[in-house]
Length: 203
Ligand SMILES: Cc1cc2nc3c(=O)[nH]c(=O)nc-3n(C[C@H](O)[C@H](O)[C@H](O)COP(=O)(O)O)c2cc1C
Image 1 (cartoon, protein in one colour):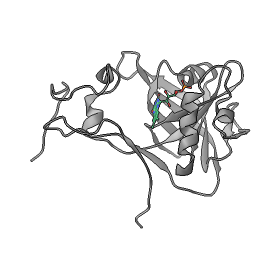
Image 2 (cartoon, protein in one colour; image 1 turned 30 degrees about the horizontal axis):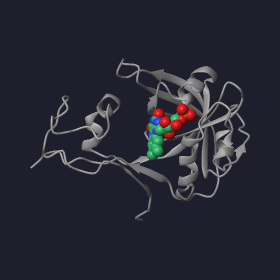
Image 3 (tube, helix red, strand yellow; image 1 turned 90 degrees about the horizontal axis):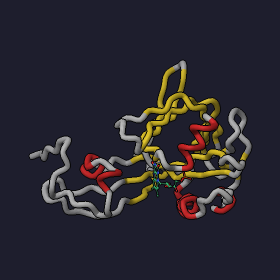
Image 4 (cartoon, helix red, strand yellow; image 1 turned 180 degrees about the horizontal axis):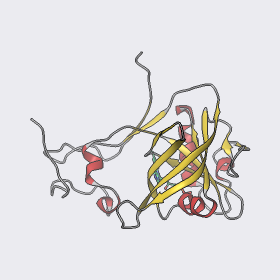
């Protein structure tokens, strides 16, 4: 039997932290859809490199354009501010072994930080945009801002779409995935933190 959950958050879905359901939809926690993890690099106003570990996206397009489709870009993040100002960014896919370095970009997050340097990563000049790629990434997409949409109209998160203008491809390694936690839809019980996995090919 399937459990159906609609637009209204069920009362038994309790917050794990104050404001959780102001930030995230309850639909997030009935699914836990795995999402590739990557680092977005932008430039701060003072020229320092900003890096943001990001976990919601799709990459697709057609012959006339290939796009990085990034919903859930926090309006208050430095990344969003930088993209809005400069209209360009890079998406960098890192092997699972760089998980610790990616997390460090969240800790060293001030205006004075070069966030790649602080995380022990290396900036590599891009060809079509100003923000650098990450040298250690096995794939980087250079992107120019295509559109920026406030899907819910509440100003909390944005759907940022970048048109890919260059791909830099190294040796393909393991994609990192974020698997958000999933509550039992009937009881609301379940873990209170997500997990990170590396993609293992099955054929
Ligand atoms: C696994 C993981 C996934 C994340 N995914 C996102 C995301 O999709 N969107 C977002 O805005 N922040 C996401 N974050 C949080 C940002 O990495 C964090 O807020 C960061 O400090 C923002 O940096 P900035 O202010 O320099 O842009 C994620 C963090 C982790 C650990």
